Structures are given as C-alpha cells and as structure tokens.
Length: 158
Image (tube, one colour):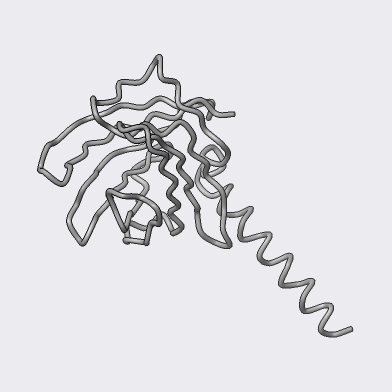
C-alpha cells in the first residue's frame, strides 16, 4: 500500500513537471506538430527542407523531433532533447550537427545554435505568432565546405 502511494505521488509529480514545462512562459504555444508552409517559406537552394517538426515534453525536458528531406531527396529524422538554457545537448540523426542549444530571448522567441565536432554549423531564431498558430524559423547555415546560406521557414500548427 505504501509503495502504491509513492508510485502514485511520483506519477503526479512527473505529470506536473511536463505540464509546467508546457505552460512555463508561453512554452505551451510551442507544443504540438508543425507543418512547413512552402509557399510562404524561402528555403536556400541546396538546403534541407523540414516538412514536419514536433515539440513535446520528455520528462522535464523539451523534445524537438524533425523530419526532413535533403536536397538529394534523402529522408532525415533527428531528435533533440534538452532544456531551454543555452547549454549544448546531443542531437541524434542530424548529419549537420551533433549538439544543439536553445535559449529564450523573449516570450515568443528562441535562439538556437547547432554544432558538429564543437564547430558552429547553424544559428537561428524560432518565433511563434501571438495566436500560437504560426512559427517562423530563420537560420544561417555554414556547410562543411564553408558555404553560408540563409533560410526562412514558415510553419503552421496542426
């Protein structure tokens, strides 16, 4: 009986952590699945397109799951799990990076930095609209050959 109460308390605690992360400082507006609106976006030539991005909670962390297509038509699936604290956390499946960090720079804007082998490969900002239904990602990418590109991707919440 005592173990049952402890487990029940832990379950309520962890559910509360997930809910508080989603509600914290407008984080709830980020949560959910986002679809790329190609008509409104300006993706650099040769850049990977990310048609679907999902923001969820994983314990007390944010998880960002991206499904994309390279310029060669190959599928890409990468997952980042971490905190919005500006520290590097591992990202899996991203050919252009092995860590990423996010930090808040306003109520509706996050700044991110992706690195591969400690070297910055992408920097950008993600902002959501006041109604929480549109997300704009501006990114500056430096590829392995040193070529720099800039893209703006517009997403609609599903």
